[in-house]
Length: 204
Ligand SMILES: [Fe+2]
Ligand SMILES: [Fe+2]
Image: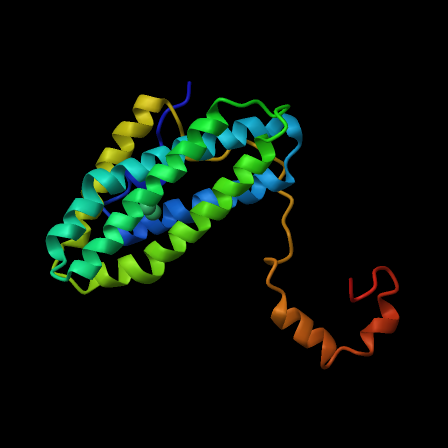
């Protein structure tokens, strides 16, 4: 009996950008989990990602993007919104493909990976270009956040989904892939520890 009981939606209205960014993080986390998951879990994770992305895209298209276009005065800023909407369409095509596949399909994993990369690109553009521009407008982002939250709740209920990812072994990785700092630290002050860590070699 899956019900939409996401904390996010039941909370007091939040800023539109905070709400959307949280969705972005949730989806990124699920994509990471997909990578590590066993084949029998992958389909459930992919399904949830696809549903969450569908809801996310829909609330942006119904509420955020039109509001942004209304508020922007510059045509270039409108173009940014148009590009985002076109990107949604491409994402939806990939989502439809994934939803029609099973994990034994040869291209299942590859298609999810391509969707993940595509979404990463789209999210980056929203967070580094669109959202900062929205903050400079006179839009009431709290009010839009409330609308987004309400619509999200409705759509999640329609789909019968919860935001919580399916139970999966939470194998925590130590940090993200970008280990530049760690590498620096290792290269710099920790040369002594090389003799201690006889397990794996520090490089490749
Ligand atoms: Fe988007
Ligand atoms: Fe988004």
